[in-house]
Length: 176
Image 1 (cartoon, one colour):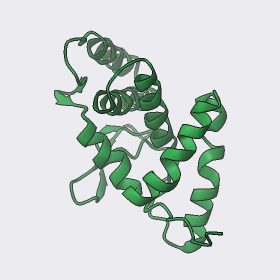
Image 2: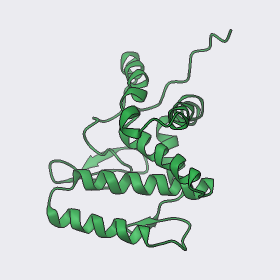
Image 3: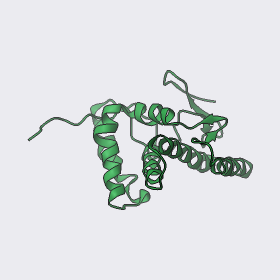
Image 4: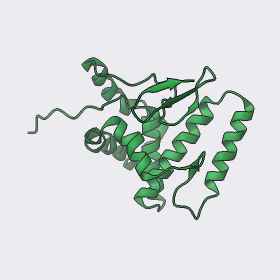
């Protein structure tokens, strides 16, 4: 029997992370190659998060236009947001790197894959699958994640206060 303690996440697992991974799996199931599926999962997660936290109708309309523009890029392997292709490398940095490669490979990805293979809906697993990981991280005192409310993304998105949150290349966040 293996008594090894599972590798904990480096930071809190967010709904955003679960959604991006779930969408990656759906994209692969629909025939996208692994790299394109990562890019698609990240792109869609950012579009949905940006829509959710958009404040004004004008902003939501602009985001809807970006979403449509991304969907109309069938010849490109990766969809873009603000001119930046949402690539597999970006997925690996913003999702996998944030939580840690070991945690992603040993715990996160297999758990999401198992739920996906059981045909569980994202809305049914998004909180339950994260609960144990986040509680363990919090009790260890190593919880460096941001609140579950904000989009805490690695690229700027609107906050509920009307500013934007950005995380620079060093991992430091700032609200403008």
